[in-house]
Image (cartoon, rainbow, N blue to C red):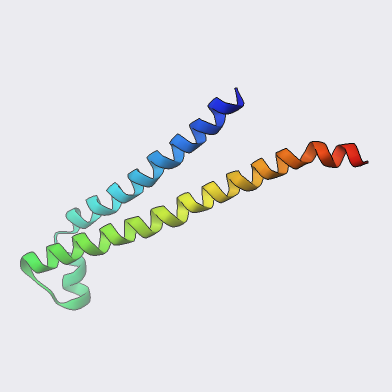
Length: 91
């Protein structure tokens, strides 16, 4: 049962990672160049391409930070659970 739970968390992290990146890409497409038009004054296709790149990169960074934090917390939890029986025996 523990194997299924650990793998379900791993699958959740994979799905969340891809979902956040896809969300960033979708936001870049949705903006249609308005973000970089206001920020840098770019117009037309160059602004749309810049928006796509900025939001795709931002989605990748956000996904790496969020999912990295989830994996780190899960590893800490697993380490604590592995060491807990040893601590109880020493008492």
